[in-house]
Amino acid sequence: MQFADVLFYTFSTTIHNKERADSLSIYEKFNHLLVDEKHEEILMLLEVFRNSRTLTVEEKAWVYWNISDRLAIMRKPRQEYEIHCEFVKWGKIALAPDKLHWFVSDNTQSLTLSLGNYFEEWYDWYLYACEHSLRNESNRGVRFESHRAAVSSLLMLKKFSSIDVPLINMLDLIQEDSEWENNPFAELTYYSFLLDKASKLEEQELIKESSEKIAHLINHKLLEILDDSIIPMESDPFVLGSWEQLNTSRLTKRSITIALNNLGCTLTKLKMHEESVRIFNLAIQYKLKFNEYGLSLYLLSIWSLHNCSLKVVKAWKRNGGKISNINELLLIAPELKNVDWDIRAL
Image (tube, rainbow, N blue to C red; front, side, top):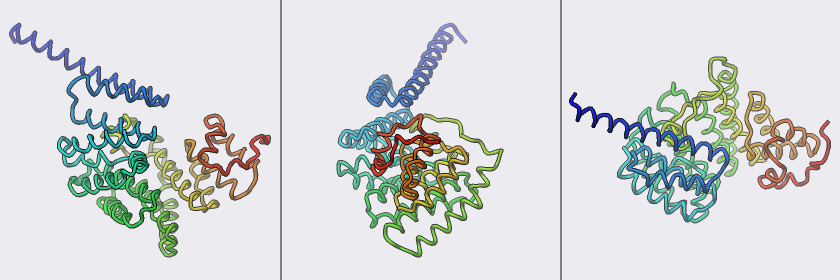
């Protein structure tokens, strides 16, 4: 190699390594801000990164996804709509056919868009992704997240006329490969949605069928996973909104307890409080890490079932008193205002 070639190689390698270091540092900074819930600073960081150089397709999709996600969490539907339109327009051209579900893979984003009456457009984007995306093993995770976002949003918005489309898509995905490691998580999610839909539409046969499926899943699949010493507690972490994170393994104990937590929340909202407490307690037995929403609904079911402040306060102190203050709980479950929070838990 001649001197000029060596010089060029060294210069190119230095630039490449610097860009790689910059990329790594952006994700580290992002994660730190994410933990501290500094939404405005995250948006500033992403905008700076977005304009710092020519991004790869994966980097740009990650930036779009997370700008939209922050705006969704901040409940800014108009601003989210503007960036998401840009995301979709760009994505239809730039994203490979197997990555089109990337821009419809989160229900917080879709529900915030609904606050500005943009949900129908989000749903059109979802249908576009379903029609034009390739279906393969490598994108099965994000396709599941996309169907899950659609069903969850339609249930929340009570748009039952459209709900069978993503439900069928979800079931078809589950049946693509009986050995898919995420199937236990996906199946419990699917039948939880089915129970939710059936209960709201008072479809008694479907309530019975989905309840039986859920019980069978828990007793014959999920408990085996939770008791298996080989299965890890958590998977390797990936940065939020990345292609890897959206397709991550759900065959972990934490993922299964999250699925149980989600089921418990559904049961609380359906006023099936005895069943809800039972499911939450099972998840707690296997070290569920509550967030404020799940904890609030767990306590609400305890209160609705027993009308006993002592039981509620004990459960709060045992499962989240250090991370959740009472005002946060009341914002999510106002019915808990009737609890005597000053009572001493013996």
